[in-house]
Length: 159
Image 1: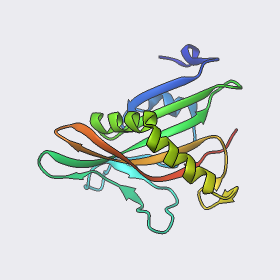
Image 2: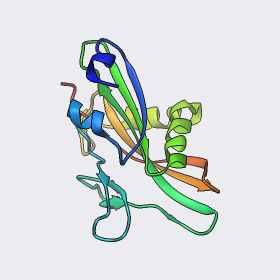
Image 3: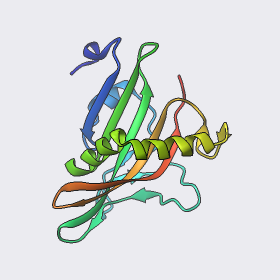
């Protein structure tokens, strides 16, 4: 898949957080970047500007069979006017599945909309825009997503 394949189209990308070559080429803002965990504790998602109560990095935890991981849902403007790009990315396959489940769950989307509606126009999560990223905690068992829970969100610039 190359840039010419997505010109003038809205796009949904489902991908592991480890493989972001296309996103690197598009140079989209990312406020929850993948952290490979080179210092030893394992991969996760960083929070570039943590708010009170937020961690600087969210990493998976778990026991045999039961795990907690993370995923990010990003809605960016497309390269052309009136197009958008939805990107769902998890640390594992099952956490990416959890992001997809979150994106189509009416209760989760209603909760997200309520949170967005409550944000001030230029608050601590950034200047309000139609583009944003949502960090999601995914609970799973036996490599299957069981629950997808909102952690935090940030607004992205419109240009």
